Amino acid sequence: MPVIHDRSDVARILDDPAWLVPEPGPGDSAFARLRVEASRFANGRTHDERRALIDARLAAIDPERLARAAAASARAARAAGVDRAEVARRAPVETLAAALGHTDPASLPDAAAIVAAPYATGVVDDAAAVDAAAERLLGAAAPGRHRVLDAQLLVQAHAATGGLIAAALRRADAVPAVPTEHVVAAVLRDEPPVPATRRLAPPGHGSAEHLVELRLGGPDREATAGAPPRTLAFGAGPRRCPARDHAVAVAAAVVDVLREQEC
Figure 1: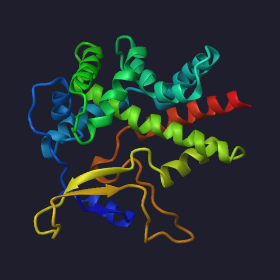
Figure 2: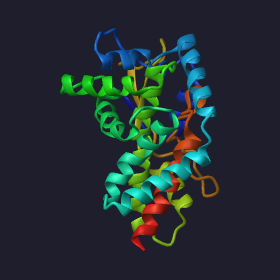
Figure 3: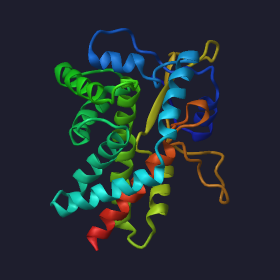
């Protein structure tokens, strides 16, 4: 699979609607249904309709209120002796699941982690475990909600927000005097927690293979001394991550709490 590294090229591709996402084939399993019915793997009108539902779902959740809940959860977990790596892994999914009205939010971080591993490619090693986790996510949604889209949000919270917290903690350990908001911004710019995405090259592009990988944290030939490399951790263009504000707010709140605990 061809790989495009330069952020200037990646940004232009993400802005171009002719570059489609690869769509999964049909399947009867819970995991296959999750991917087929998610907005992430849909194009055109189907994507737009599903994305509108996600946007409305997130618009009802205040990022700052979500951050306060995440901070409270992190403090309680640390007081109970949970190590900070586990707090970083669990807090984003658990907090978002509670805000979405899911049943038993504390049971969902493990399920989201299992589904997140093969989510982007659909390549599964342990089908039984992945399907059971997908069923758990789909079954936890509040009545009347779009179960798949809620599950999609939780899977992406694990991969993106959980990864952001873990990377920010590592960087903060190296630069303890730097404020958390700057640490989080640097991680998003330099080491995106989800490092790549994929697109289908449009006809006539000249790619030997139709499917290409786009690296989100590579070099940026258009960067200058006054304009650092652009941040693509949340994508760009019409498919930009809809939960950017929520993810940054939760990550910063949890990292702040965990840094306080180390003092």
